[in-house]
Length: 358
Image 1 (cartoon, rainbow, N blue to C red):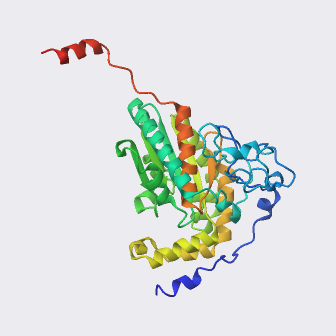
Image 2: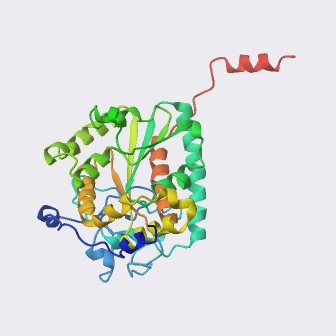
C-alpha cells in the first residue's frame, strides 16, 4: 500500500477548479517587505532600479542578501541590507486589511541564498530574546499573546512550534492542536472550542490549526452550505476584536509552501519509519484539491487580516527561513508590548533586613 501512494504525489497537483473571477480581478502578492526595525505593509513604497522584479510586483518577498534576488545594486536598493542585522531588520509584512491576496508558488522559497549558519545564529539570538520577553510577560500577567499557525499539510506547523517556541518556559506557554471537532464541540457554535483555549493573561498561546478550519476544509469539502460558512469571516473578525480589546495580541501566520516542497515532505514521511505516524492518506486527497484550497486560503487571508489581528504569509519551503521569519515577528510584537517585571514588594528593605538578621 505504501509503495503505491507516492505515485499520486505529482510534482504539481492538477487543477480541480478554476479560480473565481471575483478573485482574479484584484490580486496582489504579499510577503516580506523591507523596513528598519519595524513592520512595513505589503506593497509599501521601496525604491527599486527599473530592472528590479520588485518594481513590477510591489509587496513581493524580497531577498535578504544584498541585491541577490531583485538585481538592484547595494547603492540603489538600501532596503536589501538587513534581515539579519539588529539595526536594520527586514520583517514579514502583514497582509493589508481588505487586500486581495494572491499566493504564488515561487513566493514560498524566497531568501533561499542565506547560509544555514547565518540563519541558525539569528534564530538563536531571537529565541534568547523571546525567552527574556516571555519571562517578563508571565511575571507581569496583564496581557497575553496568541500565535495562530495555519498551512497546508506538511507546511511545518509542528516544526515551527518546536524550533521557535521550544526553548521557552513551558509554565507560560500553551499549545493547542485543533483536529476534527468532537460531538460535544459540534453541539456548540464553531468558536466555542476556540474561546476555551485562548491563553490567559501572562501566557503565550499557540494554535496548531485553528478556527480558520471552519472556512477552509468546511468550505472545500462542503461540510456545511455556503450560507453557513461565508458569514464566519465577519464572525471571526468580531471574535478576534473582542480578544484584542481584552488584552490579547493576535499574530496569525500562514506557512506558505510550494507543491514540490510538499511532495518532498510527504515522501519523507513514507521513507522514514519515525515519520509513518504523521502520514495520512487524506493528505493526498487534499493535495489533489490544491487549487481549490488555494482559493480558500486567499479569501481567508483577504477577508480576515485586520489591523488588530494581521496575517503574515511566511515563505515556508526553507525551514530555517520560516523559523527566523516567525520568531522575528513574535519578538517584535512583544517588544512593542514592552512587558515589565513587577516592582519590589512594599517594605522590601525591612523584609531583607529581617532575612539577613542572625
